[in-house]
Length: 241
Image (cartoon, rainbow, N blue to C red):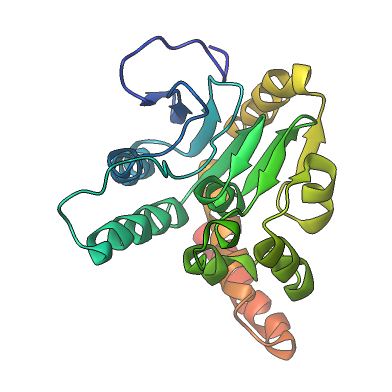
């Protein structure tokens, strides 16, 4: 099955899991603008994938990955805190996925969806991909993305794209560290299929342990990392025997 396979369903977000590979597809017509209900659904689907899969692939059937939150959505009866809590829970659910998260980005990836790409472990962008944090332009301080962005970008690069809300292409996104690779848009599906096949051939426990270790070591001072590596590698080797 292709990673960007053609799904014709009423649901704007679809998840399928086969052979421990989860494929989450955004498929709302008109740019995959994310409603509050879709964001809440993402949290539930990320949690399900975490329980049933070793690799999670996020892609879209539309020309755009996602233009971000649906700014035209009527305000519901809940409080701003309720909406913000849903966003926080969704971000946390994606960040808590223990295996490898892969995003395949085509077209526009704006606002909230930039955060999904950043929180992915590996992101491949087609050369037609275009990114923007458009919140400041819309009069919104993007605190959710700012809570994560310095894990990925240098402060000056982060402030540039936050304060200006400017659009930037796939090549610049790769230089910044937003995405891992850039491929011709026509080869995005093939590149994603090759990557996921390669990941699926690896020992899933080794993938999880490597991801966990890299996250842990980043929290340590440089001087402590050697001793931590010695202890962790020793524990890992002991478990293998």
